[in-house]
Amino acid sequence: MATIIVATSSPPLVDGGHLVMARELVSALEACGHRAALLVTPQNRFGRQGAAYLAAWLTDVSMAHDGQRVDQVISLRYPAYAVRHDRQVVWLNHRMREYYDLWDQFSSGLSSQALIKERCRRAMIHGADRYLLTKAQRRFAISATVQARLQKWGGISADVLHPPPPVRPYRNNSYGDFVFAVSRLSPLKRFDLLLRALSQPIAQHIRCVIAGEGSEAETLVRLSGQLGLQGRVTFAGRLDESALLDHYANCRAVVFPTFNEDYGFVTVEAFASGKAVITCRDSGGPAELVRDGQNGLVVDPSPEALAGALAAASNDRTLAIRLGEAAAQQVGRMSWEDAVRRLVL
Image (cartoon, rainbow, N blue to C red; front, side, top):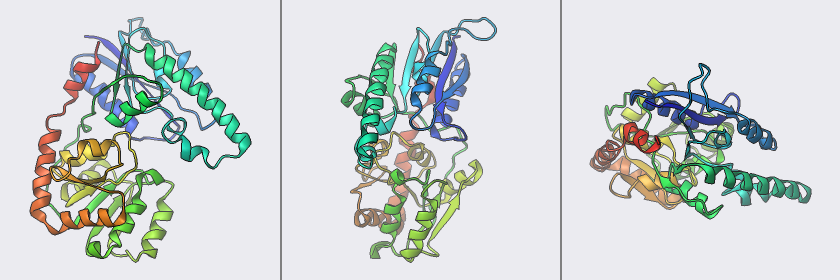
């Protein structure tokens, strides 16, 4: 039995997928006989990440409070991988995306003075990340998307290890008369694309439930009204676990049109509920797991293409069942026990 710290980071008052993954990993380590605990390091607001890196770097996790040695750290995201331990495995969710794959769109709106400042910060973060990540004994990425970013920005190698779905009582009650979309309501999730797809003539009979909270909530509700989707699109807000599982269990399919997603538990949770996932070719992690025509549908990121996929799943219940059954078989081969076996030194 090893004593293992799972280290991640989080801004205040956020409980996203990164914390779900961290808690699931702690539980899996304990189920495999290890002593495990979660450590959450600071993730300061934008512009103050240097202090968060320093705070993590000054955190020595080599010994527990009772004097027992900590045998290993498994760190999951920036800047938690800066904690100090001589046996560390990184299972990377992502680095600070504004300084990596989202740099072009982030920097495009900056003033010349702000751009100089952010270029300096970016260079420092790149240097710190390269040093810290190359010190790890092993490196895994949660998707080939994250793996490719590591290679592109830093020449850092990592193996892909897809996280299994969180341990929940998934079930499949029926292939109902609505498609389901759930995630944080932010621009990168592209629920505006979903709404525009639902307004296409081929999809005007389709009902959709959108769940989640976020900065785009009011914008999406307003767009839904402008597109004449009242009565067909329901904004369900934040769902507790029971309600979330009910929606997975009773929908026809799950739609996840996100842009360049790190991974997204939505995909594997839908699979675990026996439901196909409709996603886009540039959706990143989801497009790695969804095989077009086998366990879901993968289309171009346009309203017309997405509308066609929504109509195909909604009009053909047999197709939705076939894809959903294949999805359930695929996710059934993923386990937290296997993940622990690869992550523990």
